[in-house]
Image 1 (cartoon, helix red, strand yellow):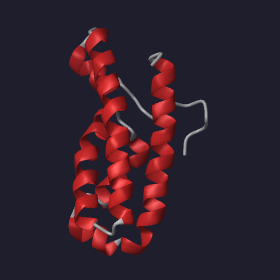
Image 2: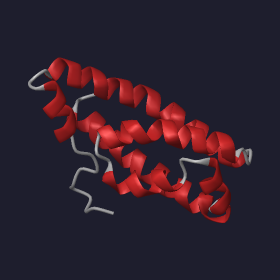
Image 3: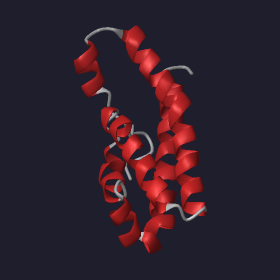
Amino acid sequence: MKPANERLYNLSYLKEQLGDNDEILQELIQIFLENTPADLADLNKSLENNDLDHLAAVAHKMKSSLATLKIDELKDVMISIDKPFKTQELKKDLPGILAKINEVLAIVFEQLREDFSM
């Protein structure tokens, strides 16, 4: 993982797409901060319930928003579990994989709230 003072996200893609529209950027960050914790809880619940098909579907859904914020720390992780056959293959590794996702996203949420005063 990156040093504590480095951001685990990068807004370059969003800024490129939005130009100087800080208002829309702020709204998109707000939406991410509102929706992603629920998706993360759903991911964790899927593992707890051993519903690996649903886990893969949630991971697939989350993958695009994490890519938009360039959360590179999770890019390969999300790709590794975004299909049901992949979750079956990695079943024994899923608790560790989800622990990493939880850890990284907790830091990203904190950094975004700090950077955007939310």
